Image (cartoon, rainbow, N blue to C red; front, side, top):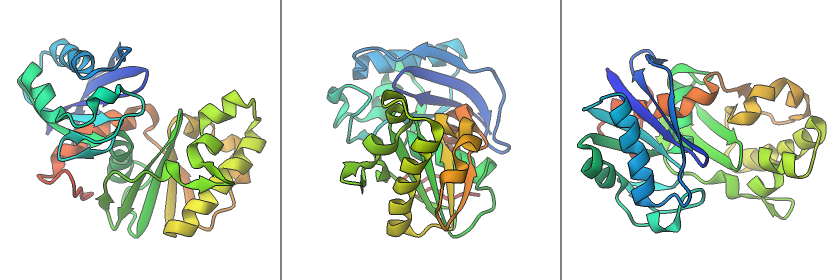
Length: 252
């Protein structure tokens, strides 16, 4: 099935056609800057621009930087607070005429990795951690997603996890990869204590430099870098249409 996948991020809104049977992107990504402030009207306009660019009328999967319940935005960190309580599915459909599935952005990345990347065919408990400006999480049990987990906010060394060990913190504190890797290992140790996963997949910007900090990680779980990297959000968003129940995704 050909679906338009859109990934809404803090700095850019990106889209491409995705073959949801193979996980392949069929076009180059088209990107527009995330507006500031990222209000519902402004972001919806960006989504329309992407749909118009591809001359698309059909199904759209959208990764969104917030907790999403049945299409409704419940939190706002890298978007304007006016999003809270807005039905993003209806907002985008009203402007574009297209039908949307909306999924948390970290969950979208996790879906991509579980279907077509590092977690493909893996049963048991698998956790995908996206490391960038913050820390996002996606948790799967035998291929079923528990949506909207927020394990970037667990406490580590008396600090919020993503404030202690995000890639943004590495840059802000000018940490070399060894020092940051030890911090990130502290974060993963705490996560492992809470969830006891069989595998942890590391995604986001830091995954490109996995070989620079992997020796610092001391978890018992198998750890793999994400395979789909910058395309995971778009691919996973499109995969949201592979089920009729977007709050209970199942890897196929």
